[in-house]
Image (cartoon, rainbow, N blue to C red; front, side, top):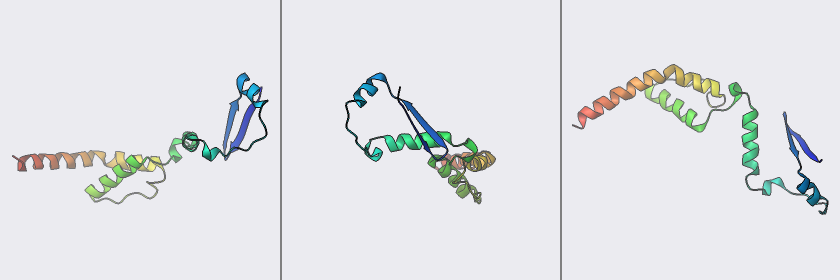
Length: 117
């Protein structure tokens, strides 16, 4: 049984080659394959790396960053340092100010509704 195993940073990748793949490998010449040419490989690698990052250290999504920026802008607040780098900082900011932001939106929608009558 052939096992493909390699380490990238702190992540060890492992794959067990099937019997069929083993049989096919015995027929091949020695070849170097550039993994960058495999469609989807880079995205799969990105996904596996992101899944290995502890949640407290993971970067926030683009949507979370935009949400924090919108709240800060509309409530005239300063964004905390590191909010674009650590999801926990971004989410804490959003949770801390979400109620005030929702109240502001509610007031705005109420006023807008009255003006449009």
